[in-house]
Image (tube, rainbow, N blue to C red; front, side):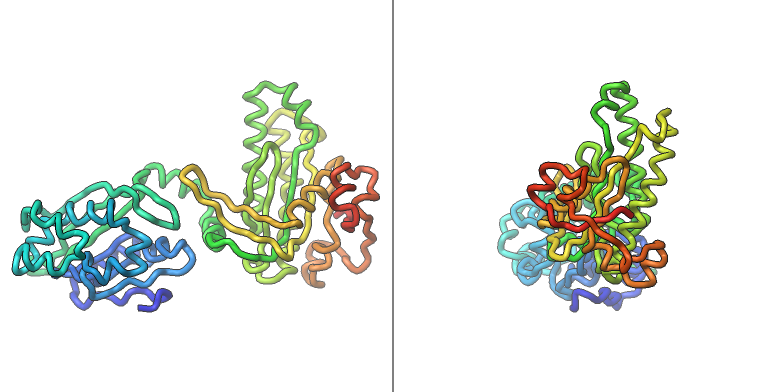
Length: 398
């Protein structure tokens, strides 16, 4: 089947009903018929196995543990034969054997040879209706993960066996997933998945950093300074997400964000989103200061905004975190621009501003055609690194 299509519903009404319910619930689930032929996989499990970019095709009609299935891409991206594949056969084996006319000899014929040695240890079971078990070393979204599996029997209106559903969830459990899911923004998660595979992606870049942070950190208690930093990060992320951007790495008191032309719809829209996010964050900082019992002039951010024509943007997912990062000369140049924007200024490069089309410029109350620029190295606030690395970049206050 085409990886972009939703799986066709099984012909059996009971299996089709279960398929619709599981897909509507956005579950990670597979369905096999009474002969253990793979008849359905939900959109979400196929999308996850496709690294969140494009749903992966599945070998419908093939035995769930047969050689054609284990040779398929979906199997290599989900099970690991030496661990989770064998675990699944061992745990579901009692049902497999009970459902296979011809007993152990026939089961060996339909199973992948890698599982033949497990057959003698299996005892048939056609009475239990639910089985739950852990799955270790399961590959999902390009990374190894532990999962919990639950399988249950599906019966038709007359009580006859129609098939089996196998559903998985991350071993972290729904309590933890619920916290992460409700705290995050679904649109931002989708944009992050859009860069799961790294590649060249033109984008606007935003850097922001807290001025005079060291004296402030020394003056405030550790708890108070931590609370300030947390409020700043939350405010910054909200402004970036609301503007349709991608939150980058947080380093110290610094904020990094990317606004992809692909996500925004055009280079002009991406540049506009970047400038809008910077302005929103500048406004939000006043509230952060007030909630931290500080004066507005004590919590000041400097901003650097730039355009990256050749950015290499991607998602880095590990067992400890998931984040978006980008490489390219323009990233380093944005950092140099930001470091020169002392006094709470927002410096934008000529490369960024001249991406703005007339309607986006008007919405921002900017006139790129009439702006005068200064070379970064000529600014009185230019740092040594700016004069060394990016002295010719043209910038202006916005």
